[in-house]
View 1: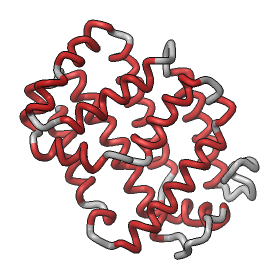
View 2: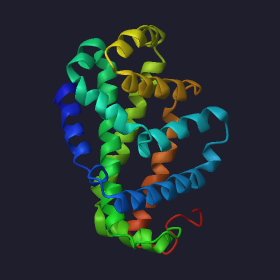
View 3: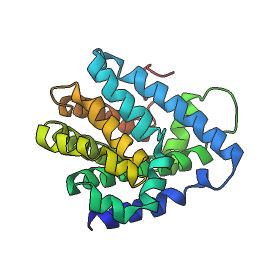
Length: 233
């Protein structure tokens, strides 16, 4: 499957999400879940995020890739001008965009399924409710796929950042990208490049984070009484 096909498939899944169907109550519950999960991620991984560079990388991963803070605008850019994007931006960049979008969409799909199985409430989530819904709505394979896509996306961004000539060529495309109304896609990728550029390599941090998330996932599926080892919002 080429980058254009991967993007098209990811966009089809993205715009089919329940959060885009105009159900305000569902969207509110989903946002509640995602706010809780971002806080949980920050709490779990705080020891690894003890430098400004690591914190900047985590902010991009947790808020932009996981939380999808500007994902709708990025997806709209790609849907409106896929052919322009494929012609204008280097294939390495479009491959990075495709994998990153896949990771974000799968995460949104898993969160929506989890959200449907959580008790409706405006109160903070309880770990036990989260754990029950987690086991009811996904498989270990799906969670492993999610972590693998996140690792792949960040590795691609990291590789691009470490090649000054490639990064310089990307910077030169800002004006043409804006002229083609691909500003949201361009800015999203640029934020990723900037967020990860402060680390000598993002790979050790990502491996540490994903390994811990894999262990947490195993504890959740095993119904252990304290899956987050006492670290939760």
